[in-house]
Image (cartoon, rainbow, N blue to C red; front, side, top):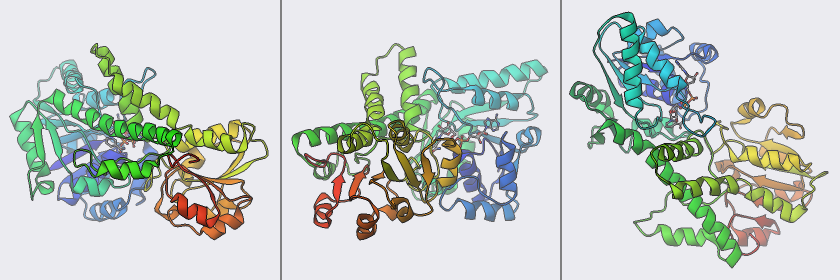
Length: 443
Ligand code: NAD
């Protein structure tokens, strides 16, 4: 099939590459000419495990192309994925300007039937808005052409995006159009072979499903973070509590980790956008408001511990910071807790030497100009002469570090473990002062 992705970011690029891998002919369009140039030079502008191989293989076979040419891209695809960003607007609601622009660019150019697929995470009612935008353009041109709009929200996780796209838990299709549903079924059939993962529903339910999924996951995290705070106050260890509750199949073990707060390009913005949707619909959304508020607070918890240990005035203090990306296996720093931790430590006069296995280049762009923030070439190099180590992201290479080196490199062996990577008894035995999240009275 002929497919176009409008937007070649984490979602559009992965979607395009994985569909090309199954034999489709895919054109990926983006307005960002730097991104397209990098892709056309054979490089991948984002860090995503396994993506480079899939992209290179399909570019070589001629099934995957990148362009900034809107005419050619719209003309190419019978199936057009809208995979542009939906960042938070000033009031927290999703900013729909990019989706609207993409829809208009389709209506302004199409000359035959198109199936338009809303892949971006978009508020309920967006399929209608996209349809209206395309119809408006067709009316302006004075042409009558058939097209369908479906909702197909994406559930991939950054850091495992290719794997998730290739082996989806479910494929949600919101559609009120039989022709479109059949095309979507055919497009996804290679990903849907050993059991039927396609869940076809009405458009609005599909749109809400994506927000509900992210809101539920964010709720689990904020719930566990509040439990961790309580655990500290009452002298319990959240890691035991996590194991204890996770073994109930109604709860399950996944996504129960307390830490330094959730970040990334999805949970914070989607929770806020859902709250705004609910407000507009006259619904309270009390639980989600609390989830959001708890998370904002949680991003400060590591700083609170540093202040408890070293005092509020951190002038003259120097910290090693491990982990800048909002989670492991990505270079994405959007809404990363590290940004809050860094800003708060610097504000109190501290200096920081940071290290991240893949997000350093992104960090140097995103955090440019922050006085007092430097970078090290390795985790160990970041430690030299620091008063303490602050861990914000749970990269695998931080899980079993050389503890003796940590002890020797730091001025005093103090570790603020924002992801509960280390067990308190081991730290005690090693003579390292360990500040975890929710790990008993002096966690
Ligand atoms: P991104 O910022 O990485 O990529 C979006 C791309 O769209 C950018 O490269 C931008 O230049 C391009 N763009 C904007 N307007 C355009 C236009 N009119 N024509 C062509 N290109 C245009 O965003 P992303 O992380 O890929 O997210 C895209 C959407 O998917 C969002 O709604 C997001 O919430 C959702 N989503 C993201 C993830 C994720 O893990 N990143 C997962 C599921 C869903």
